[in-house]
Amino acid sequence: MAVRGVEIVAEGVAVRGPAGIVVTDIDVDARPGTLTVLAGPSGSGRTSLMLALGARFKVRRGRITVDGVALPKGGKAARDRISVARANPVVGLEERLTVGELVAERRAIGGPYVSDTSLADAFDLVDLPYTPDTLAGDLSCVEQLLLALALAAAERTGGILVDDVDDGIAGTDLDRAWFAVRSVARAGATVIATATTPPPPGPSAADLVLRLPGHDVHAAARDAARKGGVR
Image (cartoon, rainbow, N blue to C red; front, side, top):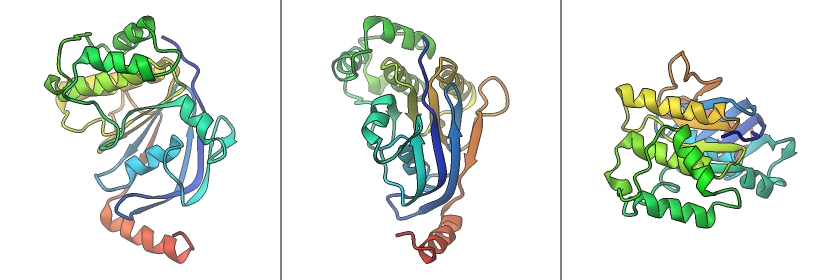
């Protein structure tokens, strides 16, 4: 499976998360075939920033372009080119559905490039056996992540967003998770992922890691941003 990635560039971006935490002065240059990891604790604004880079969350300051077109003007085109594999708690797997039902759902709503071939290629890409009768809720944490990745990759979009890669996953399962995320990038997609801790050096390492601080540091950043006119 090979796709044409997108270029996502952020300059001086500030975003505000659901709890009012402000992430400020973010610069990103995510190119096709690369993995960018937004690393930080829960509440650090990592999900909001990821969604902003994918044209799904409003920025308070700064500039984001996707393939050279500035947001929000180019938002629809960007969203058509960037898929969300997972963004907790808004985008995730419906655990009461079987894998086969989730695949059928993705075929129905996932765009013109989703086919038997693209789905088979995507499952192979993330190294996940296709078990159509298994409930999504019965899958392990790493298998749920790989399924979400495969369904997004089957759309053959240029960018993929995946949240909380290391949520509930550790040890060899975490190695497997990061290898799958990296494999999607190697296929040409521009992958932006969030995690508490970025992948270690090695074959699954990220091309760019942005380390986001926790609540205390963000409170100071929020206050400074407000003094600078960010609301």
